[in-house]
Structures are given as structure tokens and as C-alpha cells.
Length: 133
Image (cartoon, rainbow, N blue to C red; front, side):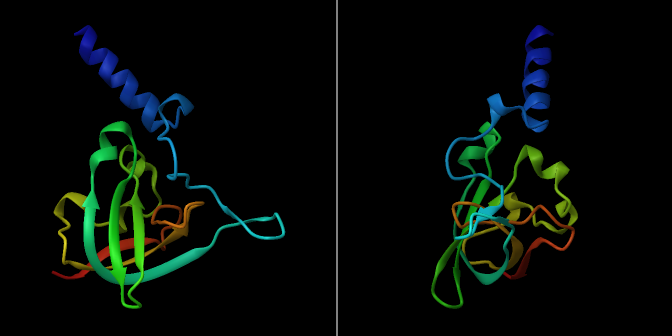
């Protein structure tokens, strides 16, 4: 029983945004800084074919990383929050990452994080949807 309580406590702290349980490196969801030093939240939409799906960081409250090759031949990463997904304003519009497959064609709208990845979470207008399989 003590072990279950400990696991639940850790999950609650992680889901509440406790800084001790935040993923390290490249997964920030904060605003991007422009050249003038003012914070900006750049919205981005992309369409492309999934080339890879990395679910390794989900166990550590990190994002699922879906890489797509866009129609312009560029590779773009989509960072889908894991435990924090329930707090996302767009949670109803985000495809289940466990049902995505390489080769699926998707469309995403979200905010760009500091690393240049798209994070579909901050607005009810954000989404990640499968166009074709």
C-alpha cells in the first residue's frame, strides 16, 4: 500500500508541474524570444507524413515526440505532452499517440517551443489529427 501511495504522489506532483519532475532539455513550452527581447508565442501549422514516433520520455513525464516530413521536405518535431495532456486546452483535438503509425499523414497546429518544435496544447484551436493512414 505504501508503494502505491508513493507512486500516486509522484504522479500527482509531476502532473501539477512540480519543478523536480520536469523533463530536461529541449522540451520547454514557454514563449520564444524574438530579436527585440520581447516574449512571443508563435503559432505554427504543418502537414506531413510521420517518419518516427518516440514514446521513451513519456515514462518521465516528457513529451511524445512525433517527427514528420512536411510537404516542403523539412523535418518537424511535434511534442505531445504526456501526463500534462489532461491540462491542455486542446486535449480533445489531439490524436492518441499510441494509435499513430509511421507513414500516417497528419496535420498539426500549435505553439513553437524554444527548440523549434510544435506543441499542440496552449489553445483550444490547437490540434494534431490524422488526415490519412
